[in-house]
Length: 176
Image (cartoon, rainbow, N blue to C red; front, side, top):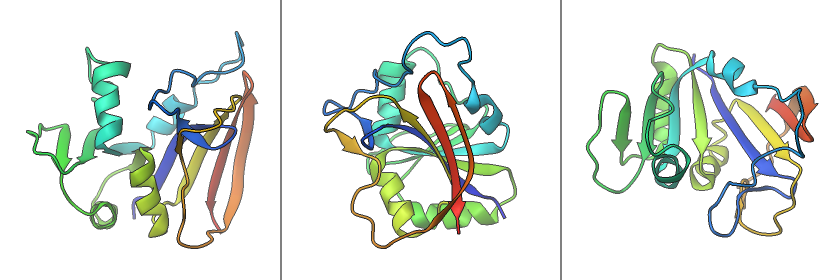
């Protein structure tokens, strides 16, 4: 069965975006020649991406407006808005938990939960995330969009791996 992985970065105080929804603070503490590309290794294990509308919109309007950066994957965008899907980007108005359960049963590599917080919260509430890849950025935002907000119940995790580079710390957990 396919595994579900959250791969995301957050501030030290638990935010994935500032009050304006910006992520321009997502970087290390300076010039570090040991800046490790953990995403390239992670991306070898997946073939499907799930994201909410706000994350999709930010990618195509701010972060990479000229090209879709996830062409090698099938992307599902959870949205209530009507949009025309393509072979690689599928706009769906479905319950995220139902979609994840269905995709887990299909053949393929693992599935990446890209963001945002609303989607993550729904999947955490249903205990559907198998792996938590969280990179902690050395920034205190004070407010913004929290990664984990008002969970339904406690989920115990087991630390599998940690590494630090450029002031950032990557943590990989699985459920206990």
